Every structure is written in structure tokens, then in C-alpha cells.
Image 1: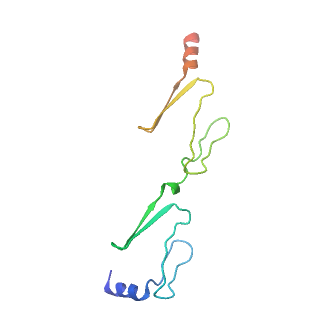
Image 2: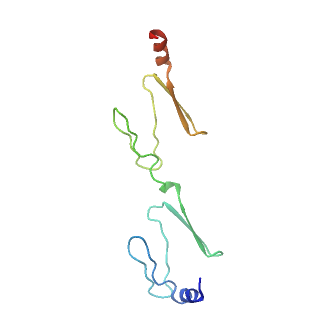
Length: 123
């Protein structure tokens, strides 16, 4: 930062802060305070007076929906409405067995006991 910029900030505080949307905050006096906020809580804002830095991180609650739309050929398509939504897969007739593995983040879908029995009978 140049000496001119440093001196100007010490005298004026800030003059105008450019933002990608909305209006530009403008300092009306050297004692104006610029406050950073997250309107929906999706960004954590942490200031550090020792290092004169501001740390911006995305918080998990603002990460978006857990999933978008699950497209199925029959029935309705489940749609996430929030980041904590859970998609639950079931088999109502035991023709399919589904096993999840949170360690590998995978799902195993195999023929269930009824499907195996029918295959053995009708071979």
C-alpha cells in the first residue's frame, strides 16, 4: 500500500467501496465504520485486529442444497429444499438391496433376496 493510500485511509477512513451489486457504501466522515455482513449467514466473516485482516469463508449452512432434483421414471422427483435435506432410497418389495458406505461415499445397489429367489426358480 502506498504512503498516499495509507495516509488517505487514516484521514478519510474509506471513501467509496465498490460492490458487485447493490449500492456503493460511501463514507460521510472519517469516523464512519464499514460493517461487513452476510444477509443469509452463508459467509463467516472474522476480523483480526493484530494482523489487520478479514477472513471470509463459506459456512456449511450456506453451501446450497444437499442435492438438486433426483429424476425417476415413475412417481414424483424428490427435490432438495435446503442444505440439510436427505435423500432416502428404499425398496418396497425386496427385489433390490441398497447398501451405503459413508467411508467411501458410495452406494451399492444389487438384486435383493426376492429377485435372487425368482431367478433361481425361473432360471
